[in-house]
Image (cartoon, rainbow, N blue to C red; front, top):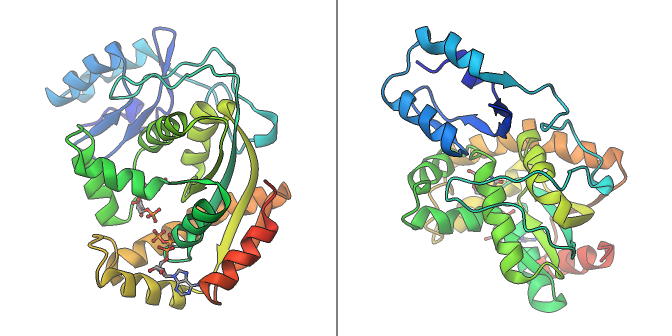
Length: 288
Ligand SMILES: Nc1ncnc2c1ncn2[C@@H]1O[C@H](COP(=O)(O)OP(=O)(O)OP(=O)(O)O)[C@@H](O)[C@H]1O
Ligand SMILES: O=c1ccn([C@@H]2O[C@H](COP(=O)(O)O)[C@@H](O)[C@H]2O)c(=O)[nH]1
């Protein structure tokens, strides 16, 4: 039984320190933890019961919205305070404190809309660093990390993994490539939790310059995904998972795109035509 306080706690403050806590399933909790939360994990595994909930409630305080969990941010204002330091499950500290800020462009769109194809071309021809969060997760799922099974399960189900994982992978990849670069961030942020994660962990290292939205019909997306599935080996390139991913896109990602539209940050193109035609349209519209 997961205590109510943990189910709704995100982020959570324990003994004066902040932690991100995400509920994975009724049985499991994925926790971006430091020592104190490791103890809580052990308690969970041992069958922490509702009777303990009061005690836990006494130890913890749910942070009021705005203290660390942001609403949709004004990304150009760089909201984070430099004092925030976050350690992820693999003990990576998500606080490089570098002065150099990377230029970041989000590339969003439904499954099969062409994000990876067009970002790859821009990287090959125009000096962008293409970081596909889906690719980073697929790489991680093949590793022996403690999160690989969880990632595998989520991707197969078309669900979004707890935000600490993509944030850790993204920041690491950005740092490995050099923060002075211009990055195309493909497939992230996909929902409010992702955007909060970006603001909390990564935005202070970046200038978010633009959001690209690749628009195409559901039918075309499905056709492309199924065609790709003939030899991609991806566990999500099938009609059932496509449907779930499409719903996540419609119900969650579109809200993020609409938010950025309200900030005049979105460059939208339809991707019905040829790849080459779409590449040229996109290149023309990019700010950096
Ligand atoms: N304009 C296009 N015309 C025809 N096929 C395309 C076009 N753009 C992409 N494709 C093909 O459609 C498939 C899906 O494209 P891509 O992998 O770029 O989509 P994506 O948005 O990155 O998808 P996902 O989010 O599912 O990873 C690829 O096999 C690609 O070759
Ligand atoms: O921010 C993210 C991005 C991706 N995922 C998971 O990966 C798959 C595939 O992603 P693509 O970018 O479309 O290749 C996606 O369906 C999610 O399961 C994620 O959890 N969070």
